[in-house]
Length: 461
Image 1 (spheres, rainbow, N blue to C red):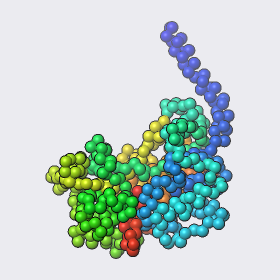
Image 2: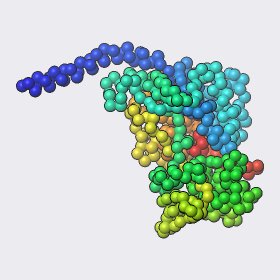
Image 3: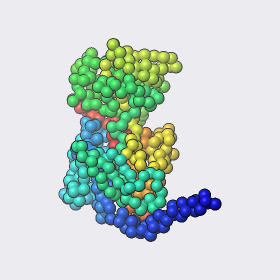
Image 4: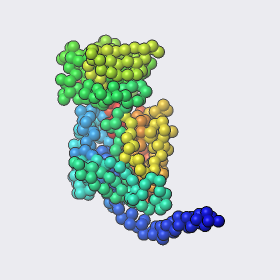
C-alpha cells in the first residue's frame, strides 16, 4: 500500500512540470521566433542560404571557422571547375549583387576555385546586408538545445538552439531559432586504406601524405620534384594530381609516378574521352590515357591497400593485387584522393537521421547512391527530404550527401532556397523544387597552359 502511494506521488510529481510547460509553450515559441537563423560555414551554399534569408527579410548569423569566406575553396584555388559560371552562382545572390553594380562573369567560362572566391563569394559577403552578421575565425564546437540535452523531449521544438563556438581561445555561445549546417566534407578525408579505417601508422605519416589536391606546379613543386610519388585514387582528383606530376616530370626527369587504384582496369578511369559531352572532361581522359600508354605513369591496379607504414627504405604500401599480397617499397610521397566523409561531431547533442552506409541525410540516400546515380541524374530535392528529427535543423550542401561523390553546387543552392522558403512560412515555394543541369552533370578541371586536368566537383564544392 505504501509503495502504491509513493508511486502515485511520484507520477503526479512527474506530470506537474509538463502542465507548467504547456502553459508557457506559446510564450517560449514566440521568444524563439525572434532569434536569427544560424548558418554554419561560409562557402557557396552557406552564403546562398544567407542571400535567401536576406531576400525574405529574415535575420541570420553566419559562423565560419576560417579567416575569410570560401576558406576551404582557397585550399584548391588553383583548380578550374568543369562547371561554367552559369551553374556556380545562386540566382538570389546574383540579384543582390547586381543591385550593387556587380557584373556577372562570362557565363560559359570555367572558373578556378580562387576566382569563385574573389569574383563571387567575397563581393557577396561584403554587401551591407551580410557584413555585420558574418563571424569569421569562429569554429563551432557543438550544437544543442538551450539547457536541454538530447534525451529530453518535452516542449523540445520550442526551445532555441544553442551553438557553442571557439575563437582564438575564447568561447562564446549563440542562440538561434533554426540551424543550417553547410560545413561540407572538405578537410575530412578518407584514408588510403581500402577498408576506410584510419590506422595509426598512416596517421604518423602526415608530413609525407597529402590528402586532397596539392599545388604541385607552384607552391608544392620542391616537395615532389625528383621524388618517387604514389597517387591513390581512381577519380578526377587523382587524375588531376597525376597530370601535374607528369608536367613536373618534364623539368625534373627523376620524378617517378605510381598510380594506385582499386578499379579492375585502368581504362575504366579514362571516361568518355572524345565522346564526353563536356569537352574539358573528355580531354582529361585522353591526356591520362596517353601518359599511361607512353609509360610515363606506372599503373598498379586493381590494388587494395591494407597498410601504409614507414620503413628504412621509405614508405611501404602493403595490399592485395589480383588476390595476392603485394608490397610497394621506397615511396617518398603519397597523394591520397579517396574521397571525403562528413564530420558529425558537432551534431552530437541534437537528433539527426543519417544513413548508415553513405552517411548522408537519411532520406537522400536512395536518391544519391553513387552505384546508381551520377551527378547529373540526382533528382531535385529540398526541405522535405532534408528535414531532421530535430525540428528546424538542416544539413545541406556536400555534407548532406555524406560520402557520396555526386554533389554539385547548384544542387546546394536549390536545397537552401527550399529550406529558407519553409522557414519563412512559404510552404508552397518550399515544396516546389527544380534544378536545371546538363544531362551529364558537371565536374571540375584544371588547366596547365592550354591543357586541362581535372578534379571531381564533389571534392571542391
